[in-house]
Structure formats: C-alpha cells, structure tokens
Length: 293
Length: 291
Image 1 (spheres, chains in turn brown, purple):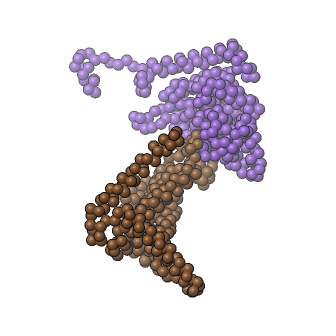
Image 2 (spheres, rainbow over the protein chains, first blue to last red; image 1 turned 60 degrees about the vertical axis):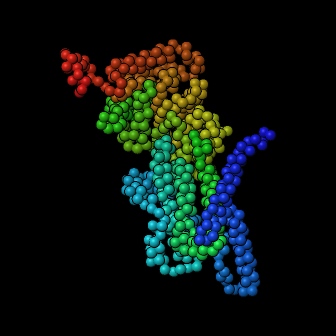
Image 3 (cartoon, rainbow over the protein chains, first blue to last red; image 1 turned 60 degrees about the horizontal axis):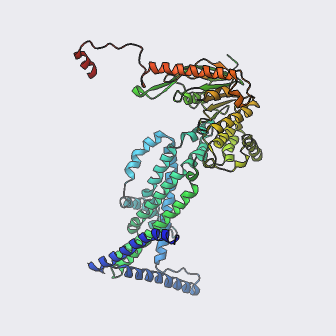
C-alpha cells in the first residue's frame, strides 16, 4: 500500500486529464463538418498513424526488392513519413549548429565587452522578435543568388529552412551567453586576475565553465524555438520534412488529410518534448550548480 | 625606506559619484618590511576589504600610491598572493584542480608530473590529502579555506594578503586554523598581511597590530607591537598578562574611535562640527523646514 498510494497520486491526475481530453476531442470533433469531411477523432488519427507506418514499411520493402534487381541504379520512391521526420530532424540540427556557431562567440564577446554589448544590443533587440515567415523570402532570395549548385546531399530547400531556423533561434543562446559571461561571480574573476591568466585561458578555464549552465539554458531555448520555427519554414521552402508533409496534405484535401495532419501535430509535439529532455539531461551533465560552493 | 616591501602613501579610495559617493579610505599610510607579519583590525564596514584589494592591485587608489618593492602596483600579481574571505574556489574543479590552476600558471616550465606532485605537497601541507578529488561543495568552510590557502601558497608569493580568511568559520575551526596557518608560516619567510575583525586573532597571528578606524573616511591607527611567544598554547595565552594588556589596549582604542565617529557623524553624513543656528521665530522655523 505504501508504495501504491504515492504512485497513484503521481499518475492519476495526468492520466485522468488525458482521458478527459480524448473524450472532449472525440465529442467535439463529431460536431464540426468541414469541406474535407468530419473533423477526425482520436480513433481516426490513430488509424492514420498506423497507415503511415504501414506505407513506410511497404515502401522500404519495395526499395529493397528494387535494389535486389537493380543494384547499380538508385531507387527514387517518394519519401515516407519516417523519411520526412528524419529530414526535419536533420534540418533543425543543421540550423541549431549554425545558430550555435554564430551565437556562442558573439555572446562571449558581448559578455566580455560592455562596448560591444552596447553596440549590438539594438540590433539584437530588433531582430529577435522577427517571425520565420518574414525571414524566409529574404533567405530564399539570398541563398538562390549565392548557392548555385543544387547538390543532392544539400538541396537548396534544406539550406533555406536551416538558415531560417538559425536566424530565429540564435538569439536565445546569444543573449544567455552574453548575460552569463557578463555576470560571472567576481570572486572567480579575481582568482583569474591574481593568477594573471591570459585572456584566452581566463575565457576557457574560468568564464566558460562558470557560464556553462546559462549557456545550456540558452541552447535549450534555441533548440525549442528552432523546432517550432522549422515547420513553418519547411512549409514555405518546400523542404521535404514534416512541414511539407502538412502543407501537401492540406493541398491534397482528401478525407484522410486532417487526420494525417493531426498525426503530424502529435509527432511534432512528441519530438519537441524529447529534444527538450535531451537538452535538460545535457545541461545536468555540465552544470556544477548541483554542487556549487 | 628602500627596504620596505609594501608601502602605501596617502592612499584614498571611494566609490560612487555625486551624492551617492562614499569615501571609504583616506590618508592611508603603511609600510611593511620584508618578513614582517601585520594584522589590521577593524569593525565590519570600515573598508578592510577595499584596503586589501588596493594592496593586491584589484583596485586602484583614487589618490596616493601603493608601492611594492618601490614600484607602483598597477595590476594584481603572483608575488602578492591573496586569500579571500569567501574562499573563491572554482566550484567545478576538484581540490587538486583548483590548486593546479595556480601551479600550472606559475611553473609552466615544469613537467606535468612535477606540477602534480608540487600541488599535492601543498594540499598535504594544509592536511587535505584525503580530499584531493573532492569538489569545494563537498568540503566544510574550514576545509575550503585551507584549499584556498594551499592554492595561494603554491604560487610561492613574496607577500601573503589575507582578507578575513577565518571570519566565516566557527570558533573552534577558527582556532585550529589559526594554529595551522601559524605553523605553516613559521617555516617560511613570507611577509604576511592579515585583515581581521578579531583582536585576539590579530595579536596571536601578527608582530604588529594596526587598527583601522571606523569609516567612512577610515584611516589607520597607531601600530601596536606584539611581544608574545606564539608557541604558547592558546589557552595559556588567555592568561598571559601581556596578551591581556595588548588586547585591552587595542579594543579600547577601537571603541574610543567608534564612539568618536558616532558623535561626529549622525547616520551616513559627515557633518561639520558646528552648532546649528536656531530659528528665532515661528516664521523662521517653517522657512527652514521648507528649505
């Protein structure tokens, strides 16, 4: 009993909430008729998820069979739902890496120098709230002008989506890094000063380790924002990920489209959640705050 | 005054600007000979930490000069090791790594092995061999301060500046660490400047005790020479007549200065020693209130 009661207390409320939500959804969906038929309830969405998985499995089997017959020619079947998820993950990762590579050094410099911070602050404040949809046309034009070769491993649409993601997500990392470096405990700085550490050593041995927890908080926010922004930019850039999947289904307008889009909604939510948990775990690894003096 | 290791000449330092400005120290004159150990005692808030930061080169004086071996101090340096009140250990590094941070910097020409052994020797000196791989948060306050001391001593400084190193510790840990520091320092010729708020500690640890008058505008008082055999037990010390005499002298001086300061400045503002012109009529009194 002693073990069961706390477990009940912990799990009953969320389970209850989910059940209530499913009931409300199921009931509400039946009330609305759209041009694509009734709004799908939970059962229909689950069914579509199963179908999407089934399509993926058969497509893979086809590809396998094809390669057995034609080992030298590459198979050009349409991307499955799983392929699209992987494309989205790749794109968001690329965008996140670009954002981090830009935001971390600039953030550190901003944190070290009040002058640089003062200089860049207006730019940061102005660009930070800009929506990905506003960036996208500009990025598209610039990438199209600069990036002429449309190679297979990095198509234009992929690059456009990734850059848009990084433009929207780098601010959180930049601001957190700058703030973290600027507010490092003066005791640690004094130690560096008394030891006469070189600027480089001071940065890597004192400033960065001290700032790491805040930097990771920034990276976590950045990844979250990036994942959110990704779907919109994929829709418009036609990058073959989840965003394009939703857009295509919307344009397609079959009676299953809404259910498929809802599968995508849940997929996006779950992946976003998992990405966030991964960042939290990483943050715990690098954080000394658990044993801070 | 050529043989002086550290000299402060008419040093003044304040913080803030305009109305919010507080002049913490003024007319600070001090000369420390090589090998000497000096304790500066003062009430909290009298500018003790500012004083040690000036000596360490972490702060620059507004006016006057801080000289180390006759040369003006314009930055912190390894020849002046500072032990901070709040230990200032890097929490993400182990005890060994914290000490190694200093050793790597001071002896870059040594091999890794030599540096490790050297760091361990200093950790052993403060009796922390068993805690080499622990992080600061796993240590008690006294142990942390010992790590900080080991780190500073490992830099092999010509002068050791200690800013209330034991103030945050309980009385028993404090007493045993006093003893430990004395033992370590007796083996070396390092010049020591200790800042403390404990008169007993000052007398026990130093050859010369100098009171810091209460601030703002704190100045140094006269120096009291200490002629006590330090090898004596601490409990015996309490009944040593010379110790008692000196302690009473210093405390009396400080209390006198404080009550003086108390009558001199009401609240934060330093008022001129003038009696106010009292209003002659009711009309005048409302005027002065409005002003």
